[in-house]
Image (cartoon, rainbow, N blue to C red; front, top):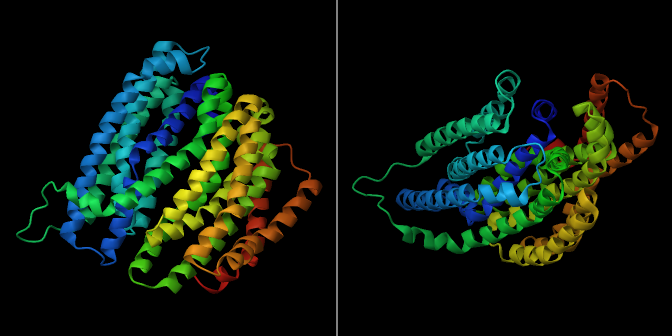
Length: 470
């Protein structure tokens, strides 16, 4: 839908959409680790590690905290709208009043969608992933597809776009809350939930560990976007957002796998089934490699063809194809380096993860800021790529040595490198030999075929997937 948004709204208005997406991520700094904590405690309850009354008291306490934080954060963003429009964004075509109104609607949407995290945690921990996936598809269709006729035939202004998004946010939170309350266990006879905030104490250490991790994640993945949002003209920032959006698709397609295995691994850990936990971990790594590596290769080696087939915008292709290539490789590596975190999450011990991420962010953030200031989009892309590669080879071995001794070399060579190797060789050869079609429709078919071929090659080398299921 993005090329059509740019067509009807213009690149500068779409720059506001990119800024809105960044705001949602930065808002997660207020999460304090509560969303993954809710998911983990839900999984532990379903694994028999806690009783229903304690679980219900924890859910109510977390819901209260979510509401207070959402209210305060949304209000702060609402009040800062005028300053952001005046001092931060470099708009040349949109009126200041229009930007301020859009920013204030964003504040309400961001607060509502952040509240949804609590209810998603309950549903994810209960492993009702089929329902959650289907509902997510419906909401995504409503937010990103059904808005198109509205932009075409009613209004293509930022105010119209964000008003439509506000309606979808209200629908989303109402539906998720309904399902979450259906999954919460009944209160035992003769007992009351009450307002017991002491139920937060047992999970506080884990929650704060997650909070720090989430903060580091936001800093690592969003520092470049924050810096570039004030350096670049709003129209160019819209183009940059497109490149990052395409590259982040690598993480999006692998995210359902992590969403499925994290509660399952947590449950296996609670039941003391370590060998089965490691088996799920390794098969899931191969599954992500089979999916993410081919997509990474196509987006990085054939970035110009992808952007042209998708948008038909030659200006956009020239501006962001090098950026897309760098970010795609970085996100591909990130999809793999996320796995040691899943292992630590299941074990309930994030100490090593905190240390590694603290060191990582101390080095990365100044590098990203410096590169973005001096070399713009491309500099930020190189900083993003190199930092993720360094984390894979420097820190991941230490995590595996601590939580699964003897695992790392086999995991890296057999579960990551082996599925990736043949696909990388063929893609490299194809990059120098393929003559691409000039028509966009034919080019889309060729890119899809190339992706399927590379996935087939990767799958042929993934022995754990061919002989067992995740």
